[in-house]
Image (cartoon, rainbow, N blue to C red; front, side, top):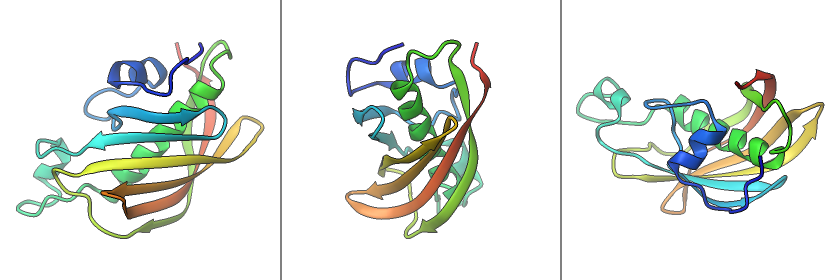
Length: 152
């Protein structure tokens, strides 16, 4: 599979990732250079299911879901970069290094995730990731994704 455009909407993302609502955390790919970097966005809305319990009266997107958003963007980059591999591999989150959280993500925020390939070795991808809201850093991490089977 080859991706000809740097822009993908939710339907295009679902062609590449197995995630579905409520766990598909990327709404749009706004920029992509295969084998190098990707930028994705998520509109954080008040009706996200996790806000009911995290935290009542003070909704905050769980940090682990910010990390998952970065990992999903990395997975899309891996698929776009290796679109001709058949059968298409299923990439799993294999590690998180140096995660830092700088401010909460709340309803109404547009979460922007920038992921850069650090290295690829034996099919395992290392990404340097940063999440921002309005250009202000909210989280960063090194994410490791590994193929773990075929996506059918």
